[in-house]
Length: 412
Image (cartoon, rainbow, N blue to C red; front, side, top):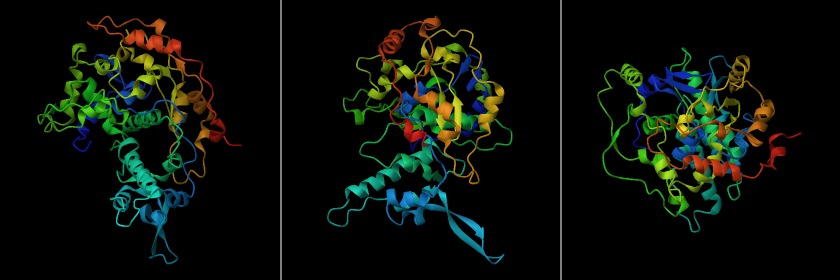
């Protein structure tokens, strides 16, 4: 990931074609969007499990010390200025909410091994949680500051020995959808969120701005060791040669390139070469959870609720695209959901209660797109067995049982 250059001009060109109502890019070749399939294949994130929601504001400093080690809260929690008793005096106090990524990296730069018995199991847990927080703040849920991660994510990292499975892929996609919806507003100047995921998606499906690899390096796809089997996004982690021609013209270059797109230029099914091999060459989770790719479900991330419309981009799954059905939510409900933002003044809110209906919809049986209503895409010259694989998977799945952890999401 360190070799990937974020291209703001590419994002600006894409954002101009983003429609918040449909959560898709409106291109000359039709609608396209980032789907749960992309999140699963590119980053191998789980797209089933408990929704990522709960309280976002409380006294996190206690939990920080408990899970990252005594004295960590005062060192890594961000400071904010407050007026002191004297009007000219400023008092710096911990915010109690945001962790500084810079201070977190300094404190957990190297695992201790100077004393006999180090590192201990507890120290390993501390460093593991710090690494995951760094990943959340810099890749998955990056904010516009670029140097903070909310301490609220620690509540999901308490039990590392037998953790609950959370729908991190759905949360990341919800965060990306909301970031794109916010960025299209004229007052927004910076885009936050999982921008690397958006860039991986663009490079995998569109020729626009795609770099050229500098060597013949290839990921170790199909490794029998699950921990060593990379996701598809690992393809873009080597050194690349980025085209220099667009640097001078900026967004106008990508605006023109997107306008010139034709159907033969699009790679609508970039993962099939790996997915359709037996056994699947991607991590086993990708193949196990492929039945969720076509589920029309709300995506949940604390205060964020965004809807997922795979039935508008069926050609990305190998099917012909019929006339899309009407959007399930009225416009006033979409606007109401977009008014929910996180703020330090929002108070002690448990978002699982605020969005209870949508949270339940993600846990219970999702409304899956009926395969029978769709036909294989006639524009694809060489077909594969993706249709049979998805159909057989959906037909063999047992009825979904409600999660036994519902009481943890909706306490009395």
